[in-house]
Amino acid sequence: MLICRTINEIREFVRQVRERGRTIGLVPTMGYFHEGHLSLMREAKKACAAAVVSIFVNPLQFGPQEDFHQYPRDFERDRKMAEETGVDAIFYPSVEEMYPAGFSTHVEVGGLTECLCGLSRPGHFRGVATVVAKLLNIVLPDKAFFGWKDAQQALVIRRMVRDLNMPVEIVTVPVVREPDGLAMSSRNVYLDPRERTAARVLFRSLQIAERAAAGGERDVARLQKAVRQEIASEPLVQIEYVEIRALPGLEPISRLQGPALLALAVRIGKTRLIDNTVLNPEGDQLAFDHV
Ligand code: PAF
Image (cartoon, rainbow, N blue to C red; front, side, top):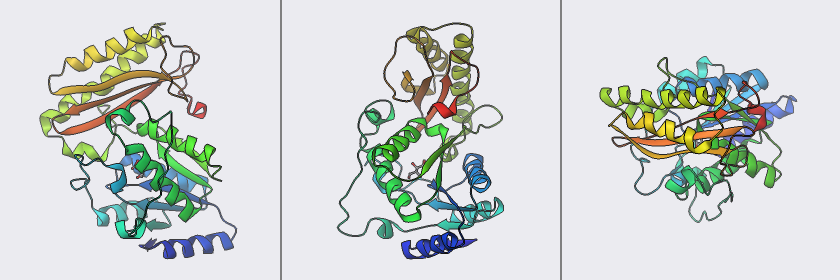
């Protein structure tokens, strides 16, 4: 497995893969891998001849009061885990390599970013879209893989790729959960044991809405209320938002008709966590091809 710290090095690797007529899958990450990341890498290896993983904690997508400096990092651990999944190359650039002095171009995706996490994290999606556009331009993959845990991010990237005619297929991969239902996240390491136990309420609350929707409940306000009530039973958990919006455009809705995203963000102590599920009254399958 090759480790490339510069744009020239990863471009040379890409050139050699292309020379042999082989396809490339890109998995953009911020490192500190868990099973969710590994599932993206396995999908990339399955779908493409060569898989590239990028590890870059992107300062542009963190607000001034956010955890850029505390964000967990362990390159040696990540390197071993990526190697075990059969990844062919890691792109591991420095901040200076990605944003040299004078860098001043940003990608702004409208509409979709003006709700949910876009409201509570101003500038976040601009940072994500900018870095992902750069990574796609650097690696020029056939397919790029994103976890559905960050559903709004996946939708924003799909929209950017469509609007800017970027020649890449965006593949979304289902949320990977711990045995007790907590969605895997690099930020779960911030939770102390009491907070970790309290965090189980997130998945429980999503399941309450899933069951209610499967039982015929179509009223969005009632579904949202049921989720909020369940979360409120855990005093350590503060709700930032609980919302149901239409897929794929994230428009507000009052009744479930087509596939919809039930998304939530909470704070547990100092840790911000997000989770979601797709409510699809038309069918029981989670319809990832809808998005
Ligand atoms: O999901 C992430 O880890 C990041 O937002 C991404 C897509 C790698 C961009 O920095």
